[in-house]
Amino acid sequence: MSPKGGRKKASSSSSVHEQLQQLRSLTNSTAVNKTSIIVDASRYIEELKDKVDKMSQETATSSHASTSSQNPLPMVTVETLEKGFLINVFLEKNCPGLLVSILETFEELGLDVLEARVSCEESFKLEAIGGENEGNVECIDAQMVKQAVMQAIRKWGENSHQE
Image 1 (cartoon, rainbow, N blue to C red):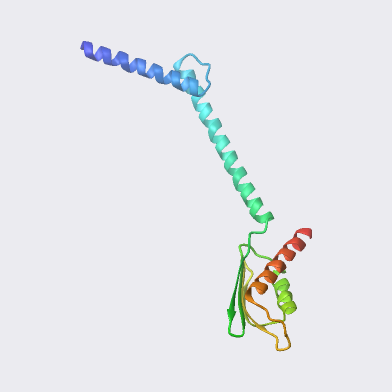
Image 2 (cartoon, helix red, strand yellow):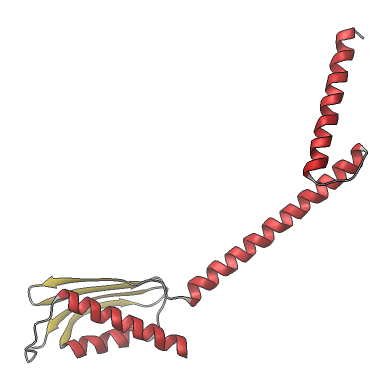
């Protein structure tokens, strides 16, 4: 062997030794020999993997719990039409009983539902055209309709949490 090869092996050996010492300190190992340091490191890695898995499960569980326990914010838009309003309501989850609450609000406002499309399967979607009753003397604007629908959703949310 040439002298260069010997030096290279020695520097490589010291490099491996330094890396083992770094590994030992990173994994809080008290081991002295190479095999024990590597075994401690592999245990440490397994512990970290377990912690990551546990945290991932907790995060998934808590995010699922928070979305199912809290009402997501509804999207409500109201546009003024020639004789009435186009009302759109969207919530990210199914909301049993919400349609009834909104229709009761329309009635209180003196709006007749002229046309409506509703989907309540995975989310709640309502698109309705509401026209003012002939006997309704009050002037209703789009903002009043939106506020009334939002209030109906809030009341529905409060009532559904109490049950």
